[in-house]
Image 1 (cartoon, rainbow, N blue to C red):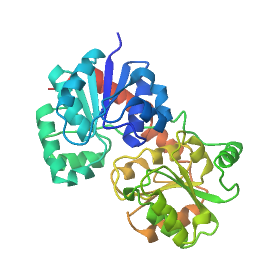
Image 2: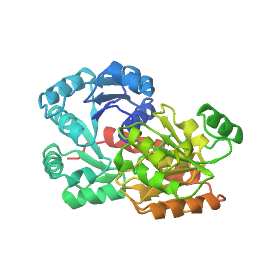
Image 3: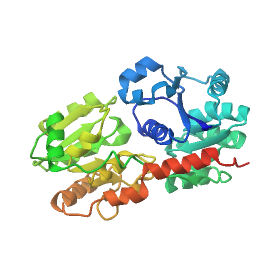
Length: 363
């Protein structure tokens, strides 16, 4: 009989944590029955906003949590865990730790909790709550990179987190042939002959898109920028591109349910974030053979190939300009795909989590 694993997330809007949960569901379904419980939202609206979720079929549950503390949700989750005959619970981030972890504790289930970043602990309220939950619930604590693990140990010396690096599906994300590159650019209505820098991220301030626009405006008349993703700053960023006189070289694609054509269309990838945990998009780009530029925040250092990619300080437009120049005028570098195969492979990530969720529970 297959084990029944339930992942608990705050919501199922497109993002790194949510993509990771969905990828784990797909990767583990041969070995286990896997569900995703989303605290927020409801089925039809969420599926309409993120069609890729349809691959999960009946394995999704939604609890329509409203803003604020809702302790009765622990009881609802407990009931739902019993209904699916759950044997283990995997929570992602602080809200799911409270509600999903609380329900798992009441049922005596194996519980693994993953922290995907540590910068949310800069808020004292989050820090106090996380400290209380780790002490009371006692999950098997996982960090998605060494940097996050170090922060957890700094804040919670008793916590002893293990590290499981995030991974991506390297069978799906792979380099494009020249013909596939041409077709991808045509399908996305992008210039066929220009050098394209791509960024796939939520259009929010923390992702640092404004620095990328400023860098593009300082030179690079032969380079265009392609932004994949949606968010509250889209109108602002469009206006900023106009103000800088580069709107004809900036392409806003909006949310892409399938990002593979995006990676196949671009020549280099840039994620100029001000804060991160362990983002998946640089791994996806490198798996497609695309060199990347990332800021040295969170766990980004651990997921970029040192031979092919550029690591820069956050919030530094000059450093970003120089990194773009180096990649643009030194295109003949090693392929970063081999680095991802050895470091960020989803199969290894899924195997590690499967062993943690189905092995003997630590006390």
